[in-house]
Each structure stands twice: as structure tokens, then as C-alpha cells.
Amino acid sequence: MNNAMTTLFPGQGNMTDDALVSYIVLNHDNVVQSTTCKDLASKFTSCQYKEQAAMECVAIFADPSQAECLATSDTSLAGYYYDCLTSVCDGDTSAVDPMNNYISDNCGPWLEKSCDSDGDCPDGINATCFEGKCLCTPGYYYSNGQDVCVDGCPVADQQGEFLLYPNSAIGGYDQSLQMSLEECLDACAADPNCPTVSFVYVSNECYPHSITPLQDQVAFVSDFPNYADFYQKRCA
Image (cartoon, rainbow, N blue to C red; front, side):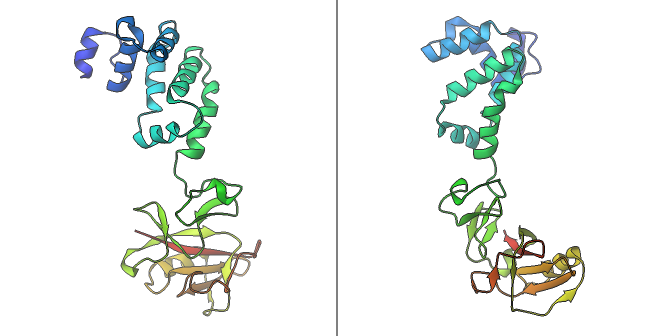
């Protein structure tokens, strides 16, 4: 498509197909119908940086899930597009920052996103705000494939990567091993009977566990500041 379009509209050879369509639609009055489209076209036709505006502003909606996320915000998609055109055409991309911040905070990956309360994390997937980051509620496994938190994970699906829960530990279980954090995590990753591990970094003590906090909520303590961290394996 790009070759055909750029034959008709030379000078736009570096644009993606979607950006080129946007360029053509907004730059030609005969294809502009709705009032919203006319407002966008009016801004675009007077733009000094049309090609850049078409590429950068179309990129905002290139990811369907991101566009769907933006559609749930208080500002219309056309409003985001208009703001983007305005900023790029005026040569001031800093005006797009609020939009990019919204995308980053609400449309990107939720795991380990900054938060102030549980309300900043997704509902209905057993997520919680833990030490300023959205994580799975301690004891739940993060499923890489489903992007949710699950209460159980078959041993065969447990991954050699972990979620970190700072300033926390499971107490009263297992004997400690003297080793570095890297060695501790490697040992747990290689052990099918080790879903979680606590590491006391003030003394380099490793405590591999055969349980999760869901199996003994009393044993899990989230009040070890500057003393210990807790790790739980991810799930496939």
C-alpha cells in the first residue's frame, strides 16, 4: 500500500501505512465529513510538521489495547489526537506529556507500576499495592501468560524468575543457608519444592521455603525494614 500511496503523494515515503492514511485524510477537504474530523483537518492543514504529526499521533493508537484503554479515560480519543496534533504542529512535544503520562500510568503493564493504594492497581485479579508498587497479593503467583495473579501454580509451570516483596519474609520455617542473594535465588529456582524464599541481606542468610503466604498467612511478615526481602516465583 505504501508504494502506491507514495506514488500519488510523493515526499511521504518514510511514513507507515496508517500514518500515510491519516496524512491523506486530514490534508484533503473532500474526504473530511464530521465536525470532529473538520476540526482535526483544520489543525493539520496549517501544520508545519505534517509528516511528523501524522506519524507520532497515529502511533498513540497503533496498539489496539492502548486505544481501548484511552477510550475509557475522561478525554475522547479525538481529543487526544487533537492535543497531539496541536503539540507536534506547534513544535512543542512537551504538551503531549499529560497524554503520555496517562498512557504510561493506565495503559501500560500494571505489574510493578507505582501506586499509592490498592485502588491504583487492577481490580478482580488479586493485585495489591505493596510498598508503593502494584504486585500480586503475597502468596498469589503472577501468571506471565495471563497477566493476572493466581492462587496456585503447578510445579512444572513455576518459573525461574521472582516477584520481589521488599522488607518482608516468612518466619519460623526452614534452616538458613549462608550465601549471596544471587546464589539464593538460583538455588530456589532450581528446586521444584521451593516456590518462595526469604533473604536476610544484613547477614546474607537464605531461607528457601516450601510454602507461600497463602498457606500460612500468620508466618508472613511485611515489617522487616532494611533487614529482609521476600521472593515468590512467577508462573507460566
